[in-house]
Amino acid sequence: MNTVFVHNLINSDKRHIEYLCKNNPNMTKLSVNINKIATIRNARGGNIPDVLKAAVDCERFGADGVTVHPRPDERHIRYQDVRDIRQVINTEFNIEGYPSESFIHLVLEVKPHQVTLVPDPKGVLTSNAGWDTVKNKSFLKEVIGEFTKAGIRTSLFIEADPEMISNAALTGTDRVELYTESYAKNYPTNREEAVRPFIVAAKAAAAAGLGLNAGHDLDMNNLKYFAQNIPGLLEVSIGHALISDALYLGLENTIQLYLRQLKV
Ligand code: PXP
Image: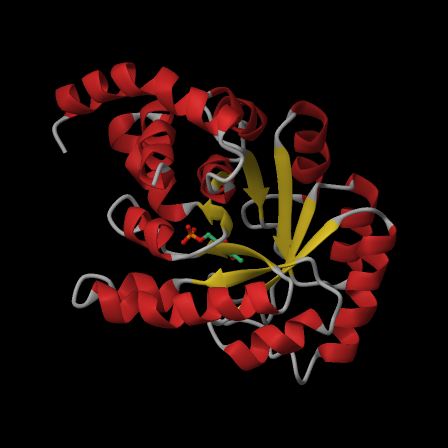
C-alpha cells in the first residue's frame, strides 16, 4: 500500500473510526499483542523499545485493548512487565498463557479483564493448537473456577471444532478464542472455504452461550473478510503481523488501518 495514500486515509478516517468504536458496541474489538515489542527489547538487554510506553501508545492510538503472553522462559513479555502494564493501561488487558501454577498466581495477582488459556507445551515457538476440551475438562473447570471467583473473564483458545466448543461450555468459560491459523493459511487460495469452519464454530459458540474471540495469523489482508463473515465476533487479538506492519507504517497508522478492517 502506498504510504502517502495510507497517511491521507488515516487522517480522514481516524475520527470516524473513533466515533464508530465509541458508538457501536457491536464492532469487533482489537486487542494488540505486544509480545514482539518485548522480543526486540530483550535482544539488547536494555529498555528500547519501551514495552510500557508501547502498551500505553496502543490504547492512545485507538486499540481497544492490550494482550500479553508471558511464557515460562520469559523470552519476550516478562512477569514483571505484566504487573507494570496493568498499572498503566485503561483499556482491556488480556493475559494469555498456559495455566501453570506460576501463571495462575500471576493472573490472580494482576487481575486483568480477561485471561485466555492456551494449551502450549513447554518450548513452543508460538501457540500451535487449541485445547482438547474433552480430555482437559476437569482441569480447565477447576482453573476457570478460580479465575471466575476472582472476577476475571475467561476465554479458551480452541480449534474451530463444534465438539470442542460444546465441551468448552461445560468448563464454565465465558468465551472461546478461535485459533485462526488454518483460516489465514487457506485464505489466499480459497477464502470461502477457509472461513466456512469458523462460521460453523461461531454458531456453535452462540448456541452454547459462549462469547467469541479469535486470533493467530490474522493480518491486514485477511482480517476484514473474517470479521465480515463471523457472526458475533467480540474481539480479535493480533500481534505478529500488526507489529511487523508498524515497522513500515508506524504504530498509529497500523492500528487505525486494522480498526478499519473491523468496521464491517
Ligand atoms: N492468540 C493466541 C492464543 C496467541 O498465542 C497468539 C500469539 O501469541 C495470538 C493470538 C496472536 O497471534 P499473532 O501473533 O499471529 O497475531
